[in-house]
Image (cartoon, rainbow, N blue to C red; front, side, top):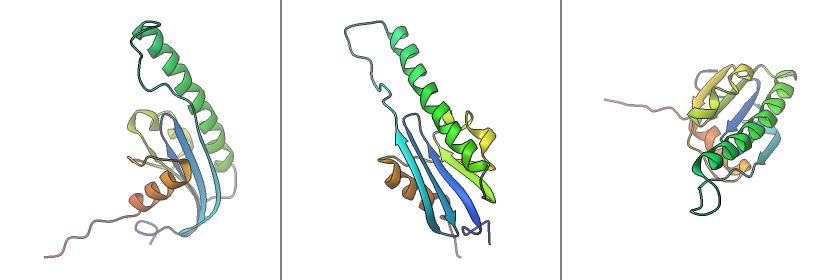
Length: 131
């Protein structure tokens, strides 16, 4: 059952460079939620400072966001959950992997709560082919 349906008490998180959402679930029912977004620059403006400086500033913003996300994941991992599942952008998953039992790529976007619901639904979806 645990391969195809959410069972037991577990944490499920979505991590992106600018968004973090974490739910604690009992089966398919979410019993707790924590989420936040961080202000991460998306595009370099034509004026002002160099592309290199922009990239350093952006990486610093992402680092701060991931530190906060790691603290949240560490706290839930120390709680009473059977396992922790983390999904999100491929380039940031590796930086939170220490707190996850399972990781997977997800393209869920939007505000934290809606993005978590989308990612949760996608993660537990199974393709079924019949002949």
